[in-house]
Amino acid sequence: MAKTVLLTGISGYIGLHCAKELLESGYIVRGSVRNNEKAIEVQDALSKAKINTKNLTIVELNLNSDSGWDNAMMGCDFLMHVASPFAIANPKDPADMISPAVDGSLRALRAAKKAGIRRVVLTSSIVSMMGSMKVGCFNSDCWTDVDAPDIMTYIKSKTLAEKAAWDFVDGQTGKFRIELVVIAPGGVFGPPIGKTITGQSMSSLDQMLRGKLPMVPQTEFPMVDVRDVAKIHVKALKVPDASGKRIIVASEEPNGFVSMAQILKNAGYKGPSTRVAPNFLLRVLSIFDREVKGMLNLLGMKLSCDNSETIKMFDWTPITFKQSVLDAATAVKSIQKNHRY
Image 1 (cartoon, rainbow, N blue to C red):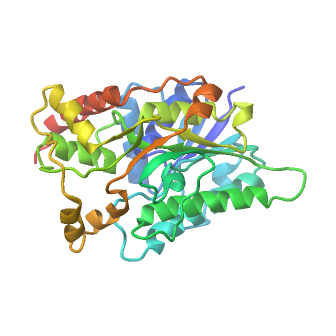
Image 2: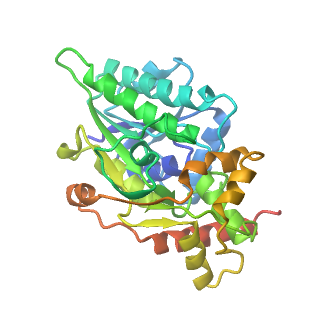
């Protein structure tokens, strides 16, 4: 009998790929969105990607509200909690990003436990591990210091949300206990499902391809293809050894905007620039630009990671960064043709 998964954040870049992977793996999917307009977008994007949606239903949930969570969770076998706010720019009030990330995760976990769901797969990020490190190699035992200088609000939100989830799981009482698996992707690239390229990764690539980024920041950290992220999410529902683990889903070696631009130029794209923005210039610009300010703690970063456990546990061969970038560029150029700028 097919198992049912509540997938939060189904309308997002990663969420749509998780929905595709779940549906094609035979799961029944109950996806959550913030409003009905998003529900229409999800159905349209998946249908146009030729994905059979007969086993998909959409429910409305809000990370900031208790409404609907118990009903949404009823009859589900698994919870895949992908939803979380993401932006490079630091909001004027950090709570605008931190509260939905932390409180939303706890709402999802409480409802899952109440519904008797055994395993929860939660999407975190390598930013909860690499923190303010500039060079070196991090692993799943590392934790970000949320009080480090210049740390962006998004990094705080992911770290605090993951810690809250582990505290919830560790604090469980009684015989029935939820199993938690945390998926920590690196910087996510790869082709989107649908025509939306407003997310941070695809928006940056869109600007680069249109020649709107005359200089790029010098920062490198482990990257991953969105299709690999979705596959590991789905495998993590059933792999016994994944329980209680923080799973790094990223390439071992670092990559960044410079290498991405070079890959695109080598492939014949005219828009990308490989000129590196001086760090001092970005620090000056950060006074006036909240998005630049949000990137300050990433400047000069060159980090690798230990992904050996993930490769072994999931028999995983990562899609190369080059393939990920080129596939994403092909998709974005196709979308650009249908938009007027």
